[in-house]
Image 1 (cartoon, rainbow, N blue to C red):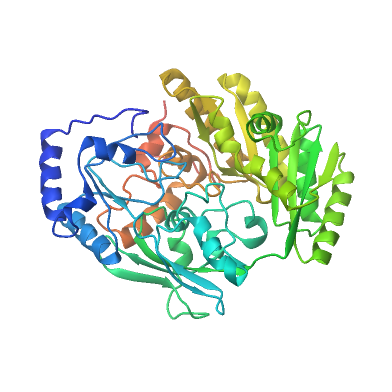
Image 2: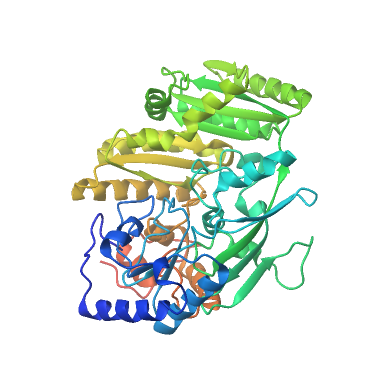
Amino acid sequence: MLESGKHDGTPTTASGQLKERLIEALRAAVPACQLLTSDESLAPYETDALPVYRQLPLVVALPVDASQVQGVLRVCRRLGVPVVPRGGGTSLSGGATPMPNSLVLSLARLNQIINIDPLARTATVQPGVRNIRISEAAAPFDLCYAPDPSSQIACTIGGNVAENAGGLHCLKYGLTVHNIQRVRALSMDGEMLEFGSLAPDMPGLDLLALLIGSEGMFAVVTEITVRLIPKPAMARLVLASFDDVETAGDAVAAIIGEGIIPAGLEMMDKAAIAAVESFVHAGYDLEAAAILLCEADGNREEVAEEVARICTVLQQHDVRDVRVSANEAERLKWWSGRKNALPAAGRLAPDYFCMDGSIPRRAIGKLLKRIQGMEDVYGLQCLNVFHAGDGNLHPLILFDGNDPEQFHRAEDFGADILERCVELGGTITGEHGVGIEKLDSMCVQFTPAERDTFLAIKRAFDPAGLLNADKGIPTHARCAEYGHMHVSGGRLPFPGIERF
């Protein structure tokens, strides 16, 4: 794993020679002005949105079309140079962090919206298009692209495909995987592959869902066709506050249990409420232990009926206060608090980990209680925000990355949360991916046989192991060193390894 906050800007003799050979070969694939090679120009690419891990790449390539991407990949394949695909750099799991002696392949300049088809309700775009631009381009046709991560003004659709990103409205409209129709991508060998189809079905194996969420380890995306949906006629947001986090969690489960599928259902605890309210003044109840944001959308009659049903359920679960947005401005104001949870946390400490586990909805309150106890154990504050409707939680662990001891406590705190997610029947990631951050936690979630299967699929797409190397799937040796072995199906992992 890369060291926290450190890199050595001076290459070794061997890496220096490799860099010279790589630059010389790349000039046949892309113009020299599209290559970044000096330490100063490489520095912005040494990390993504998880800045505690840093590593200077050898080179950054900035292709402008698929043919240039193909040329860069073929050069790197021939020289055996690892390639790290990068979009907007908003990954929160270290997914776009360079590896030693690697090339960063930035797709930011492949940023054209190729076509909007209002009849088929699709948009075909390049991977560097920012998420929000798709909905902006579709707005004249009263259409929109549903997945809306909080980083949608900056994150790219290519990165969304790589991580299977979610968003505030994915409870009703689905994750990225449910809203992509076709992807064109290049293998590490430079072969153009097509996943999915513009037709309702396609011949052969459907590998589209396998590619989405593969974290840039299988192929480099060059073109994406997304599904568009009609823009809802109206929306109303219910803001509910509770005196207890477990009661709020029970209310979430009850809303879904009543057959209500809100457009969005988010939860924040007391610490997150306080941080956000001082930052954006959204109008939240500062005395509440937790708040829920529950949105209904559709036509006027549908919205009125759904809001009434939501309020009825909330009243049956000891709600402290319930308000319904009076107009669009108030709805957006309340949402602005939730969407600014991460920058609000950034005002409270030099660094934070934004964790990303998923649990059954019924366990939300239980896990929040456990996290409160962990704060005392690790001596660090944690703010909690949830995509509560689908059980995807984002604990924000605050720490100072300049203090190595604090950094390691924060890492242990995060790993502890993820292990509790697995214990409660959940998973170690919902939408941020594994990247670098959760490699050790993969050892807790999956058996050796399962990880062998993952590695076999990786080799099928990338036999040389050069695409986003050392991300996503831990080796058996790493899991042995981690030491957090779990028993699955009555079998002890790695039975041949001596225990100490």
